[in-house]
Length: 150
View 1 (cartoon, rainbow, N blue to C red):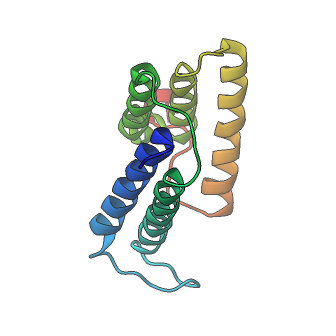
View 2 (cartoon, helix red, strand yellow):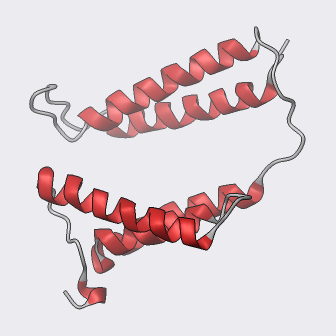
C-alpha cells in the first residue's frame, strides 16, 4: 500500500524522465570521464535520476507522507514554458538574456513571487552562467545574441 502518494508519483516522474534521457542519448558516443562524449552527461544524469526515482518510489511504501490534495498546474505551466522559451531564445538572444527570461518566468510559479528578488536572482545567474559556461568552460555560446545588437 502506498503511504506517501506525493513521493510515489514524484518518483515515477523521476524514473520516466531519467529513463527517457538515457534512451534518447544511448546512440551518442559515451567517451570517458576524462574525455566526455556527447552521451556521457545525459546518460549518467538520466541513470542517476531514475535511480533516485526508484529510491523515492520504494520509500513511498515505507514512510508515511503527504496526500495529494490538488494538482499544481500553474507552476508546471510556468516552468515548462520557461524551459521551452529558453531553448527558443538562447541562440538569437544569447545566454545572458535567455537565463534572465528563464529565471524570471520560472519565478512566477512560486506563491512567494517577488519581482525584485526574481530580477536580482536572474541577473546573478546570468553572470554566473557566462563566467562558468562561456569563459571557464569555453562553450561556443554567445553571451549576447543578434537580438541585442551583437
